[in-house]
Length: 136
Image (cartoon, rainbow, N blue to C red; front, side):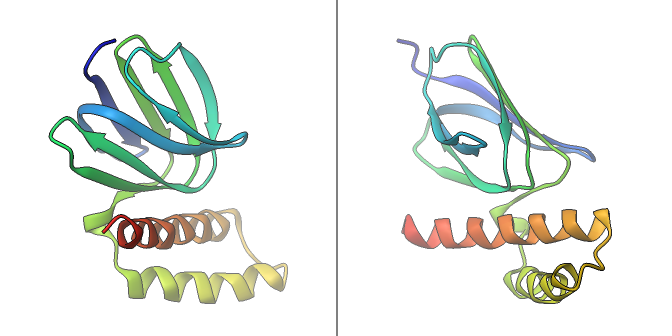
């Protein structure tokens, strides 16, 4: 078994993370999945989630992902999402405000596609914050 794999998280506007990892945990349409080095090649659809990347030095990088795709190939894992943010970039107050405001708009049936995307990203950001508190 290999000790590490390369991981990249790419959003539409920039590369969010690139580095070596011993474990990646994300949520797909089929449920949560853990990827270890030497995992078989696969593609999957991601749902809004808080992805966890365990680096080779044992740190956990938590990334809020709005959905997208997971690609696993020998030695490489790619998370590709329209929108993504590292935990350190998240404003809890802003994310909570967005969820509250956009939830009302969605419930009234008046949300645009962009507002729905913003809602999913804000939810993923709150999940990322909650996940970081769980791992302490």
